[in-house]
Amino acid sequence: MKKIYVVILLAILSVGTYGQINWSKHSGNPVFQGIGGQWDGYLAYIGSVIFHDDLHHMWYNNYDGNNIGYATSPDGITWTRDGNNPVFGTGSTGRWDQEYAVCGGVVMVNDTLHMWYTGHDGDWSNLGIGHATSTDGVN
Image (cartoon, rainbow, N blue to C red; front, side):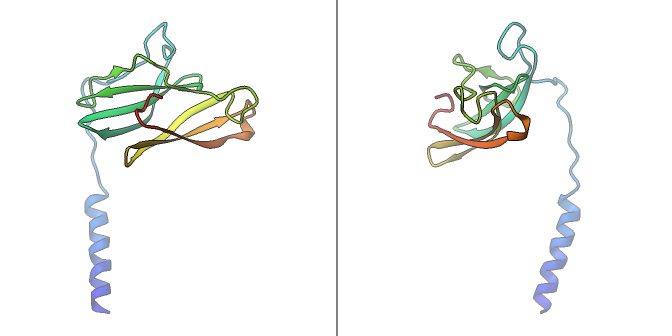
């Protein structure tokens, strides 16, 4: 019983120690923006970033919520957009995601990327979460 109390006490102390995190904003913010006249020109906002093969891989959304772009960075600060952007869009007519597709998260499992995204068919009361896979983050 004494061991349980020690574990609980350590857990409580660790929350106090590690639960208080101070973030320092990068002095060069923003590190990524939409480009005027492009598909993401009005606004680009983050969907997901993972670190794999010595690169940061970011999937990001445009303002309209109908396209997802892809960019890479060696340092998380300087980003290079993929030449195939946007790399993911809405579903075809009649599909549940025909009007809206926004990246929520991407994870790598073995050699396959898994993306979960929010979509709807034009009716905001019909929002759903979809799943898509890719081996390169683009196709």
